[in-house]
Amino acid sequence: MRVVIAGAGIGGLTTALSLHAAGITDVVVHESTQEIRPLGVGINILPHAVRELTELGLGDRLARIGVPTADLTYVNRWGRLIWSEPRGVAAGYDWPQYSIHRGRLQFMLLEAVRERLGPDSVVTGSPVTSLDHDADLLVGADGIRSSVRAALFPQEGDPLWSGQVLWRGTTYAKPFMTGRSMLMAGDDVQRVVIYPIAPPEPDGRVLINWAIQRKAPETVPRGDWNRRVEVEKFFHHVADWHFDWLDVPALVADAEAVYEYPMVDRDPLPYWSTDRVTLLGDAAHPMYPTGSNGGTQAIIDARVLAHALATGKGLEFYESRRRPTTAEIVRSNRKDGPEVVLALAHQRAPQGFTQIEDVIPREELEEIALRYKQTAGFVPSALNERASWSV
Image (cartoon, rainbow, N blue to C red):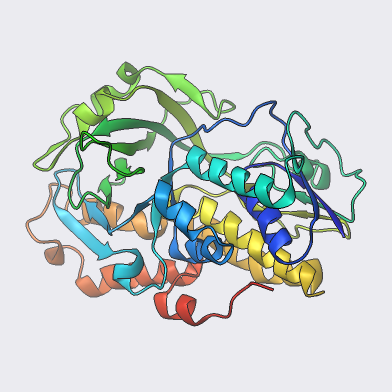
C-alpha cells in the first residue's frame, strides 16, 4: 500500500510514523514550504496523545524537550483562585501532559520520520494541489487552509472567525507558581494563558509561552494567520495585570517577537473520506485553541488511521471513531469548553469574590472539568484502561 501525506506538520509526521509502526512503509510526506523551520509558539500535548507518542517509541525524546505540566489553574482578573487541578501523572494518568514549543515538537517528529522511513520520505517545496496522485491513499494533513479539503468541498469558503484575536509570544523569565503550572487568568472579556514550554536554562530562567485573547475590532486582517505586530498595539490591555506571583506586563514587554492570530475554526464536515482520500488534524477538524486539543487530536487521528488501515478496517472505521468525537470538541470549544469557568466567575461576581465557593459551587466546577475530559476522551480511568491502537 502506497500512502501520500499532504503536510509535514504534527499530524502529517505522526501519521507517517504511525503507518510505519503498523507495517505500512511505502509512505511519502509532501510539504509545501521549501524549508521546514521550528516556527510557532507553545502548545500542550495531553495525556491521551502522549500515550500515542510513547507507544511510537518517542517518550524519551518528548521528555527531553517538553515540560511535564503539573497543574492547570484558573484565576480571575485579580488573581483570585477559581479552580485548580493536577495534570498528567499527578492526576492519575499513566502518562504525563507536556507543554512544549510547537516547532521543537515538529522537528523531533521530522527527525524520527527521516530516521525510520528514510531521508527522502519528506519532500519539501512540493504542495499537494489536487486529488490526483499516484498512491492508494492521499491523507490531507495540510492544515486549516487544506488544499485537499478544498478539493473535496470546493464550496466551503474561508474559515469562520469568532470575532476574537490572539496575541501570542514567548519570553525568557523566572519560573512562576510551581514552575510547571499552566495558568489561565481573566474573564469573558479578556483572558491570558501562560505556561513554560522548555526545561530551565543554566541561569534558571525558562521559556514561557503566553497568549492574550480578546474581542477584536473589525479592522483586524482576518486572512493573515501569523502577522507580526508590535507589543504597543495591545499592551494597554494588560498594563495593570500585576499578580503577587507573576508580573504579566513585564512578561509581555520582554517578548522577542509577538504574533497576532484571528481565532478561527470550521464547521464539522458530513464526511472526511472518499475511496482514496481522507482528512486528518486541522484539515479535518480545525478548532479554537480552548482546552489544548488541536495537536493532541491530530496525533490521535494518526494512530487510529494507521490502525484502521493495517487491520483492514478501512476509512469507515477511522471516521466512525474520530469524526463524531472531534465534531463534539469543535462545538464544545465554541462554548468555551473548560474555560467557561472564567466567564461564569465574572458574570456572577463582576467585582470579584473572596471565596469561589460563594460564586460557583465546587460540584459545578468539578462537573465542568469532567464533562470536557469526557468530550475530548481523556478521563483518566478510561484512558488508562483502553486497548492500544498499536498493531
